[in-house]
Length: 278
Length: 336
Image (cartoon, rainbow over all chains, first blue to last red; front, side, top):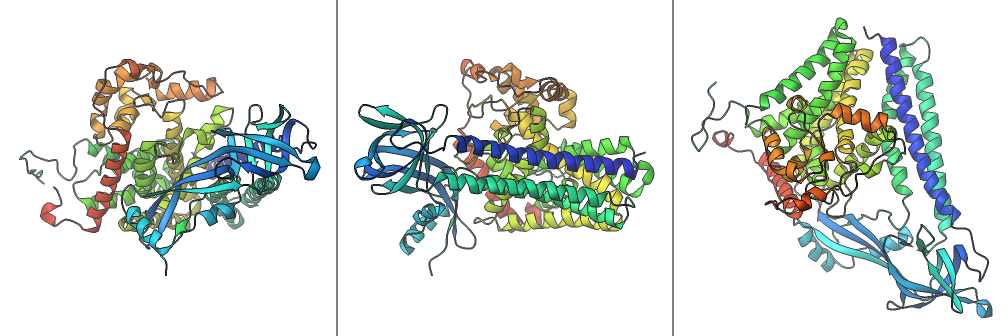
């Protein structure tokens, strides 16, 4: 016979294994962030190496842009009369140009080649992406809505460019090239061009993941403790079981949300919505 | 009651579209009977009943899968009612399959949007942990995706049906918990969750190590006869992806005819149990099959619609079904 004690032990075992797996998966995200942080150590001014450089875009070969971040989206109409966008692809492309590392006479030029592919990551602030995704006009909404109502949806690309004069952070391999320097992807890694200090993203991301780990562990401990509160299978124990069910069903969506929030900015979800103009 | 006669003059089975569907109805009936037995009869709370309930809970999700591809009954309202029953059995709204499985999973990441249940979602080195953890990722991905899909135009009936299924599944389970808490938790909820999480794991089992870009080597098949009898031919996964409109009872013959000449032999497993033991217990690390799609390049070409066309057909079918529920046919047309 399967007594309450046996089944209770089984249920608690499932809860514990599951909770620990979620915590372990969150640690995998920490490991990825740590690996990124290791290549983001600032380089000494003018010196080659693998690390982080803060510079200004001196020349952009793509219509005065040195890089662009592109999100391909499809918009579909909703019954509320809006257009809901889903992301199809995230792309980063270097258009070529040069950066000025340092100021005045101490400025050193870094050549940036034209490159695209998985090893190029363009990080732009979420605010800049959202501003680029705003509906430009009521006429644009009307035109888009027609396509959005069809099976194929309304396709568009949201592009954010890095232009001459913008301050950027470069993370990758800076190597000597002729009389100057050149940027390229780090060995086994990527070349990251960011419009903000990427270390701030990493810090915030690690904090979020550690926060989730702490929450998941403490909540798990509380659930188990309340479940095991004597007398077993009494009222308090029952409350613990309810908390356990809530934990089992609730902690995974929270974990997924945290995971999505620490996606590198080059692949962060944009999605978004166009509301019908007034 | 006499079977109806179709417009072509052939005799149609009573109530169900295909005689084999009684197997699925039987599976669900046995499952609900096991749950009721354990809940109401203390003598039934034993290993045999519990193990059987967990197994049939998984089969209940198999029935959800088949039923959401092709409704079991002639009458559309019966099909919608059956979805509600199935939802209680698995503690999730069965209609979620429309978006997550029929539209997204069947087309992998063809349109750039990642499959919500892609094997790449889990990355532990010890592969057994991936199997256990997979529903923790695929589950929220699925429900988030359905939440984004549901508000789109033309899905009003879907939203209504989805809400009814959630109310019955969760409300019914809560009622049982309120009536008799511990038996409900141990002998209703645990089997419900077992089946729901196993059907998510099947995505990992059936696609890990395969080439989802290929036409015939995107899935792993389990071809044992007894296995497929009880699993309603869900072991034949490649042909199911490629010809989603085929009735499940015909998949074995279609697999032998179309898939077998074009598939890497490593993707035609004779036994799921042996595969699970070999893959997740005896060899702890994840394996990749080199050039898995070689066999299909050597085989003669076959008339198979492009993936874009198949996706468009699936979306059209889903839209037509929802429109049909919104404007139910007159009684004389209900069995057409």
